[in-house]
Length: 288
Image (cartoon, rainbow, N blue to C red):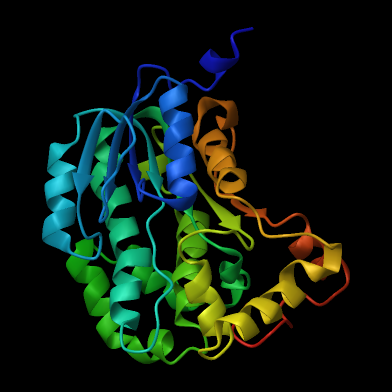
């Protein structure tokens, strides 16, 4: 058996966001190694040997549209990996990047996706508890285009910005979107799969921002608090970007051709342990 061929990406066009760093960079390197034609975008410079690199602010519709216009007519797989941590004063921008642009790109590229293709997002353990927001997010999930989503946000700004953790709301929205859309005719009629990975604590360029936020401005205090919550229970450590980026590629490849509607938790079993011990959803305020 040719291991590379079973991924089904050799010689195929794939689009990926956020390739300059972190989990997406690891995924992009793997896609290149698998022989895919990689069309990558990031706000930062991409120094990998991709087929085409594009610079864009994924929170700016005009820049996103310019990138979309540069892509080939047929695409096998889309990997939506861009995101920011956010902080008071920029929650709207955070939501544009973490959800609005992600849904927009997925749906703009949907007609160009090959039969049996895939859309795979990077969500987060912060998306735990999405089920409790699922009904409230239906209007956002069904909103048309970028403008429709912006209108929903303006009408529900208190739901997002007023939440103890607006970042988590953006991830709950992604998880809810996948759950709703996996059987939507727009996807399933052509057997296009839609999934997320939900990473646990991972060392990336966002780590300091998460630590600072969790520590109320004190990064070291935040690091200790997050370690106590996510790694102390199993005596472990934060994941590497590769430990998230590689499963992301697997989930979006033909290896996973019968997997759709999944929010895949990659956290070394922490959430499973919480669920088994009846404490899922009762962690630190704003985490779930």
